[in-house]
Image (tube, rainbow, N blue to C red):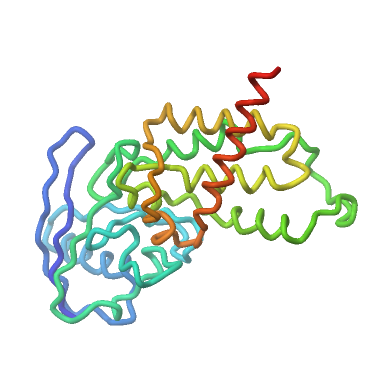
Length: 252
């Protein structure tokens, strides 16, 4: 496959960025998108040019660090559900196609270099309340705390969030509500998460606002691009929990 690439290049957070044009030639159709960038970088290095900086880690669709916007869509074509960039294969594109490759675009995700953004804001939200004080370190009896299957399934569904930030990059408001909703719903639905339920919800929403993320306005773009297929119902749950936590705080 031969492709025309328009890649965002930016030397640093303060430098001016631009789209640079490249030719990607003889790309195997079964190569992943990141492998295609590896091939291009090898050619750039051979010519003495600066390689394209992009983020990656496991390359197995687990970690979510492969945060690229491809043709305007985080992680790539929206018709490929539950797909991270590293699991996107070049056979999904056509020979001779022009592909635009940019970093995730959000105020709370400042660009570090080229296609790499700083998504540590999500980590700070998680640290603000995404934990429980229940004793850990040993394996409890699986039947010690009975959990209804519907609640267990809902918690596991929310826990699937990998924190990639695609929801933020796709949202017109750069909202992190799907991410926060998933993290809050995961713990708030379990018995072990009840002691901190109200404070967890208040802390994580407060931190989300402090980090500069926007509000949800029900565009559902987040659900469409989420590689873990987190449903927008976690946002509904977050809103309910936040209202209950606010009332509880006011009463106390």
